[in-house]
Amino acid sequence: MTQSSSVFPAGIWTALVTPFSEDGSIDKRAFEALANRQIEAGVHALVVCGTTGEVATLTDEEKCELVRICVKVSAGKVPVIAGAGDNSTQRAVATHRLMKEAGADAALHVTPYYNKPSQEGLYQHFKAIAESSELPIVLYNNPSRTAVDMLPSTTLRLAKEFKNIVAIKETSFDAARVQTMLKDLRAIRPDFLTFSGEDSLVFSYLLMGGHGCICTSSNFLPAPFVSHFEAFSNNQISLAREHFERISAVAPLMFMTTNPLPVKTALSFLGLVNTRFRLPLCSMDEKQTRHLKAELTAGGFL
Image 1 (cartoon, rainbow, N blue to C red):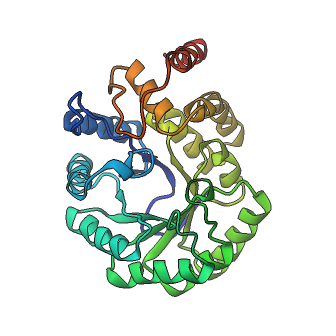
Image 2 (image 1 turned 135 degrees about the vertical axis):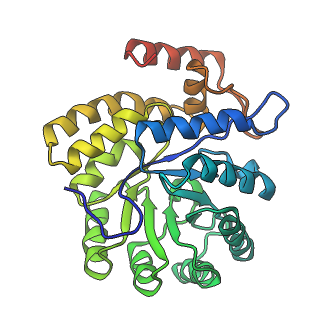
């Protein structure tokens, strides 16, 4: 059974897409509907302005507006975590404060991309953010996106020294590394949450003692992710495996090309959003779109 003494819930945290109108502005009505759909499905938290939400193309004003909408829709039912990461520590601190003012319950901070800082540089970056505000921080380690890998020793150092650093979204495929990190974190911070950053690894993370997943695929298919987590938490492992088989049929499709192109396209099949992206991202080509629709239809998801 997955347990934590954290003030934040273990479980499925959906990293919401950001829908855009035909004129390129944020489609606020569609975003509100997406957030409501997730809450009604039982997800445990909402993550706004992440990679899946095309955060790199959003202005500060748009980020704050998305957080305010999500906080209003949630009305305290689930926490709202806002992406605030940057490869400039100064800008990351400024955005962190903005997200607090907008009403976020915590901020998600990815490791500084492109700069390729050392482990000490990573520590100093997150130290500066943690000391700038009491707003809780969720670390995000995704080497494939950032070109820098935050090692477990740095994560442990940060978790030990800063109580407002409360969780990590970890994308490592190295099971031995993750298992050792989880064991070490439990020894120094029993309240510290560890989430899979890879949708297809949620079951593995739970089996190793992790706390859930910060998901992209749950935008499209929230209920099976929630059911998987709840079955596992109730020690119904066979049932959890059944739900995971359904998840496993969808998750790889959501990453058949650059995130969030497939998941946003899948949501368009449901009539929830259009396939408008902000450059440099653009719609999937016709062949990819037909393949995605055919696979989702064959699997009974459409």
